[in-house]
Image 1 (cartoon, rainbow, N blue to C red):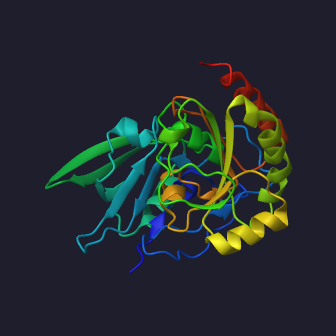
Image 2 (image 1 turned 180 degrees about the vertical axis):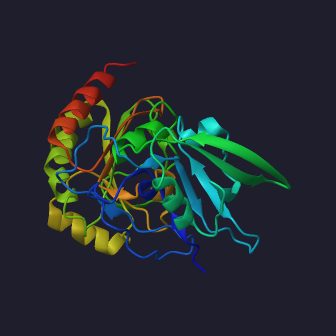
Length: 289
């Protein structure tokens, strides 16, 4: 049975961000298909009048009530309040929490700066916590908070589609890696192809690896890569494990990883200005030895 999950994208962005609703989950782990980010979506931090907690929650696997905290964003109000992954939120602002939608509704009803009480269960003990809600950041800002400055997640269960695909990030140590999460149905992803083809052609000799990752199976991914004119290596993440680890719930999502395996920047959606900044970063990183 699929578990109902509210990903970080829905808890950190308002309905006006340009992120389309995710497709229905199609895999046993309950991971939703990534949603498309609009090409005109601004890539600068935005402020929403809605409150923000900074958690990903899902329906727990048992019938003991509450919602399960799957992830807390680094530096978020949730983390500052002491909420941890694995906690179960039982009540929020005095109201019982039955499903993930309750968390979204109750948090969004409060303004940034509001203090909101929570009762969570951690193990066998219940705890009363209090979180001061923040302003809702945009998708790129959340991804930066979550990943930049931390070790990049492992690449798991990837199948080569085209080009040379290394089995894991460990084998790419000493090289700058640009990971692109994309899908054939994502119209915005097509804008990214010429730029990444250019990076692959010009920067590969300097130790830069450009790798596209799609959740489509190998055969349809091969067909799509050929149709789109993708020239850089592509891998299939048909299990969805790598995409879930990188929380690529909006497409395209781009990660820049340095020679030590640390995430240095993230871009959600398409922005020519931000791509120029990322290229400068990539070129700078090739000089770090």
